[in-house]
Length: 40
Length: 288
Image 1 (cartoon, rainbow over the protein chains, first blue to last red):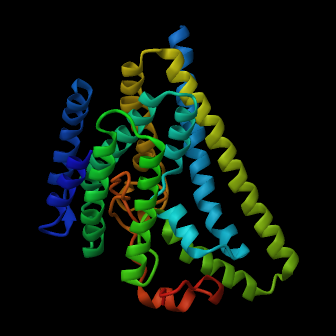
Image 2 (image 1 turned 45 degrees about the vertical axis):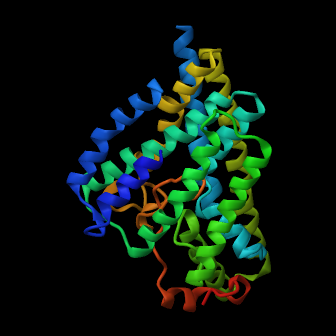
């Protein structure tokens, strides 16, 4: 949960925006994060 | 067939919660500003609080279903950060202003505090009170530093409501018209709260009927309830650039609320707007 927020900030910080590439990265990360949480 | 009915009850419950939250947030600011309720109290209510998750978690907690509580909170946060922001950024780049980044950085340690408290699977009353206190402090500190309500969540509604109140009063529709308007707004607020309460009961009972096993309830809360209550940010039509989120979007994207780390916020009101539109009754200390 915290890592996802940190990831968003890291992705957005350099150019002060979230672009499409970062958006795809976040979308791809979602099932991975959910799976990781479910297996804990 | 029975499972489908139970799932349908959860879906209907989520829909009721989402509608109720929309009605609550949209009409509360107008009614409260007209009734002269403290701007800080409104900011606390509207900045980072998520009525959808609040209704769900309070109901689940009262029904002794902690798995649903944790699943909903974690699932909603994760879905907002990764899915809502992801879809928004794919559709159109999302600008992050310096204040948004600042809110996010400030929210990180607070979110980490919440996660640490919940790590063992239990948050007692004292810890809950500490988390709520941290949230109020977060709003207060930002307000103090920026000398205006934090540009988070629904706080954009505050200035709009204040402007609306000023405009209507100035239009001279009389005390009767103002009372009727306040009554209508309060009616929507009450209807919103009722819909959230009924929806939360449907959702929580639906999940509990689907499974009595706590770990399964957590998974359902994470994958179904949390995702569904967060996904309204993506699918609802409205004032959002890039179609990202319904009620938050026209105000820009931003930061997390402290206790939940949610990744969204409102745009920063321009000083000129704040100065020119905020009526005296709504001017809080330092908001200029």
